[in-house]
Image 1 (cartoon, chains in turn blue, yellow):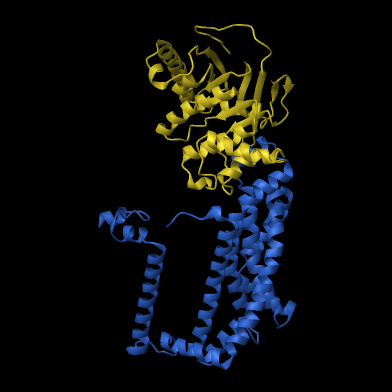
Image 2 (cartoon, chains in turn blue, orange; image 1 turned 135 degrees about the vertical axis):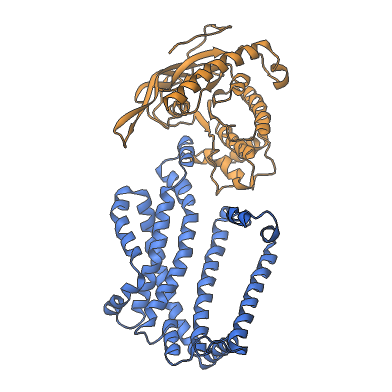
Length: 277
Length: 278
């Protein structure tokens, strides 16, 4: 047992750890798929076959799939998803348009950092849900409050990551730029901006997840449409299978958009591709 | 500062020095304590055109600060540095730096890293620059890696890129800040010989910072020994060894052994002093 306790993170010398580390990309995907299948089967057995848990509270995968089909056939999914994606994309775009320039400014001009920084951190530290009732008061009951919550959730991870990226630009590389005669503009364009790119994408990935949370939170109360409204309506009428199906769609959106960000990063910044893990 | 010169002195009269350092002092304000930290104090040094000078000293003796002043990256607190008779007020195309940590741009390929200097100096007009970049890459033995990113290269190969980037800018003076300090021992020996050959071929004036005694002797026409607390020149020694210096034959050269023993004693005293003052 003592060897167990002594081993640190990933210090396993062989066995499963070595096998996992040596897998190809395809192998890793297969392992993940296997894990998902095992979980779904156990879930199905526990709820659907043995009935150990009341399926109304925790519908089995087969029921969730059925709920998904119902949502598609009734057109409820398409209608609500369209509204949500519209609000999400609008809010995210606003966050990017504000976040990138303000973040760059914070990272390069100290007074701006000192003034905007504390405000940004304060808003970022406030739970999104606290803004929800205010958003309704400010923007009514349409798509407005949803866009607002998406924007405010996505803005700060983008802004603060960019500012941090600018500030942490490698001093040696800055010196190299100066030695070879770069003026301020050249330094900015050829050194500071490219070295901030990985931080931008790290911020965007966080922003995708937080924006989705903001979107659902905004739609959960007082909205007549959107994925959040769909979830709460289904749950309130004990159609938990449909609620689960709607949640699954939101998760797929969130994970999918993170992947989209990663794909864009590989295309825009091929040098950041990390070693295999 | 004591300037003890052991044989041979080699005091032939020559033209005005290319680099002239006069009573140079650099100190920093330490914000936390409100006191001043003296990095280097009262440094005087003349470097002739085409000379290879190695700067040897323990870590923290201010030798990097010394080089940064010549590069134009750090302003002197007192005294001045003249290059070709002109006071240094900032970086210039007559000086290029090879950095200890390579300082390559990770988002640029080898080719684009080597062209970086030319690009910043706005020397990309006309078609000739492509050939110059390619030539420099071949000179450091990196043909075939033009489109690799730095992270795909070993430390030694990354430093070859740093070297090519410096050479292609065609400076008169090459400032090298422990360029082989982060490279493994075997690669270091190979690259040391290559650097010697390269410099001999181009005839550049070099200031080479190192904390390796062997490296300082093998490469230098003159060795400047630094002491710490505060950083200052302890002594300047002419090596007086013939070139080219093959590593094998020189290891048994009595002059090499004499220099090594002398420098070893000098540095050991410094290292002990540094340890006590901490």
